[in-house]
Length: 179
Image 1: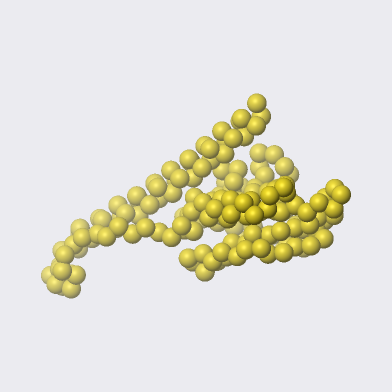
Image 2: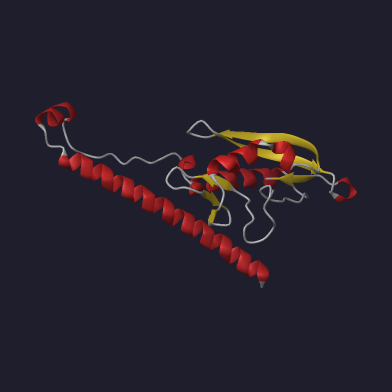
């Protein structure tokens, strides 16, 4: 029963994230349309020719949904190559497993707070999250080895890394990829 609830929660999280993204996108398009239709000066008409809007699709990494899609794509590719291994989501440092656990972190430009895989805002300042994520030794205390297996460039100059970790807590020396 718990597994079914978790699967339903994941599905709803993705749906909410997509709806929030679409809502922000439509708001932005509405604002752009309002600006374009209110500018009726002669200079504007001469230089631009026509008043038409071309649909602008933001890059996939411009939203939590896009980041989630890239992460899932990378995970699928990784799992197709890593048969017979266990995959764990690395929890954010300082967070206890449970409803507040974070597996995916996205810092939004449109609001204050951090959008997380738990699909709610976590009470941490985005700059604090950045500091925590940059301090890898503190959140890989039991780690014996870390390899960066894949690095994806984002449209805004960031990177997404897929890490392969070997922790001292692994039983019988099993390697466990962490995403």
